[in-house]
Length: 73
Image 1: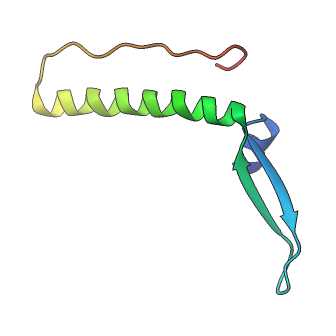
Image 2 (image 1 turned 90 degrees about the horizontal axis):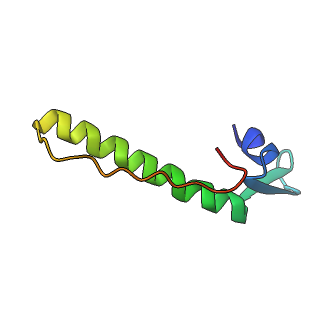
């Protein structure tokens, strides 16, 4: 999963030698990865709100927002 996100340009990684065991790879979000995370968090929030409304039978309209970033979708 991490390597797929890295290949998509959403994560950057570096390898650090380890005194015990194999070298360790550390990941961080790229600026594009941060932008996508903001979108995914919004989608997750909308999904959570939808489920909450279904469970509580709340009929308020859903907050609909379609965030987009050029080249990501």
